[in-house]
Length: 321
Image 1 (cartoon, rainbow, N blue to C red):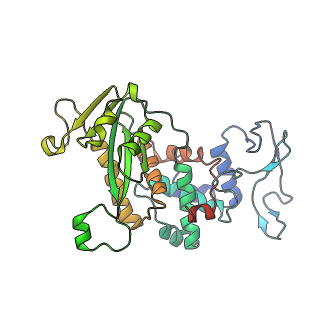
Image 2: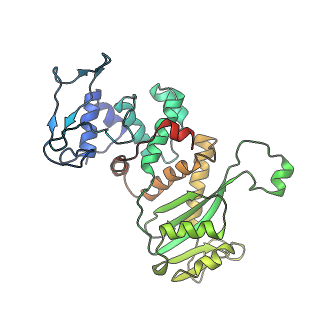
Image 3: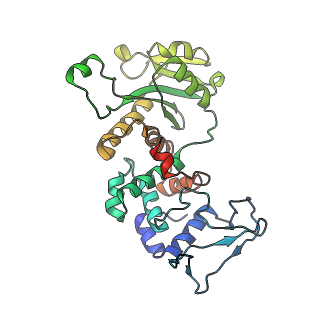
């Protein structure tokens, strides 16, 4: 497996046609798969008259590589049905941005994408959200083992928050985020919740953890007392007395706090401000990178590309979320 870096992409994909061939090798290492019917028969490649490009109905020249399915007789490309489908941004630019978002631990701001690749600010913002849509774990299996659970508050949001309000309720304008982390593999399941209540935490745990076969590690927060009874074992760490690790059981919430620390530093330093409406996608982005932190960047790119199918995201859906 060749190491995928920015320099590698510059050398290997000098044209849009080369970008399509590169993408086909990423998504279809053996043979093309029809996105319409799932067939893997030997499909027809519709070769352009001049070998590399064809004229579109509007008179423009396109280097898109088009295939035709032998079974359903429909045309498709490597972008059909993916997060790249229907985008007017060149595939070369998409690949560069994907590699940067996979490799950069702090993420990449939309304004930086705009400056580097010469796209409109709204286009850069939408591209980043499409990639975050692919990073989201849509069909997670239940975690089993030692699970670290913790919560934090991200913010504050823009708005009125004077010194008296902050002193009276420092979490008033912040958004709660809950994280469940497999202590062995480091896989993260994190999501934005309306509030840190027993019902919300119960739902998050039920969706992600096989409780009867797992051990729960939490801090001393009372909200976890009832939740811990459904686990095989529940160990706590009392921060006021034991600092970071329970010296008798080894329980600790350090893994969750490390994840939250990276999330907050990156939001403050890279993105500067994230609204409550879109925070869940940013949380999913950092959960994806944290869960794959043991992978080299190339393997992480391959992992992301395997999740791009069926993740089409419209601009209207993003702006109205």
